[in-house]
Image 1 (tube, rainbow, N blue to C red):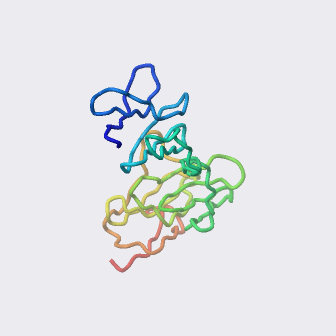
Image 2: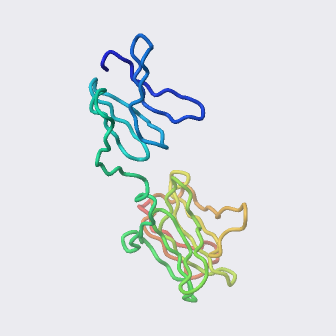
Length: 206
């Protein structure tokens, strides 16, 4: 620009500014006038210089101008992305299966299974492994305790998993049954009793 080299020099304990340095190394001149803030990301089209400072864009029209001017541009940021976003449950709720007491339900939503109490108490994540789809959760009772069974594709082929409604113990995983032996599960319903198998799947014929 104007026979010189435009750069942003780094100087310890001093502000970072855009300077013009002629080829002969004399007459170093400062062109950024924003006090108290760094000048960053300066670029030029050969005539003008634009840079960012204090979250705003500044333009130096020419090296002979009185100084830079602020551009009236509203810059985007991450604030809107970080705001809580309400999710409409109706568009993401796939399955809900209440237990025999009516105090809670096994809920399937977006490939995960949760236990949700109806009035008071925590919601528990039963199957939320990334990259694995859990679906068709149903509740059943065994030994006087509420359990949940669902379909998982954790091993590629469909399988059944079951766990207590209160969640598994620390470092424990849900019990997996019949992996790769039941084909594609289309529906799932609890058996009349929990003896033997806790559920009766309807498959695609395999």
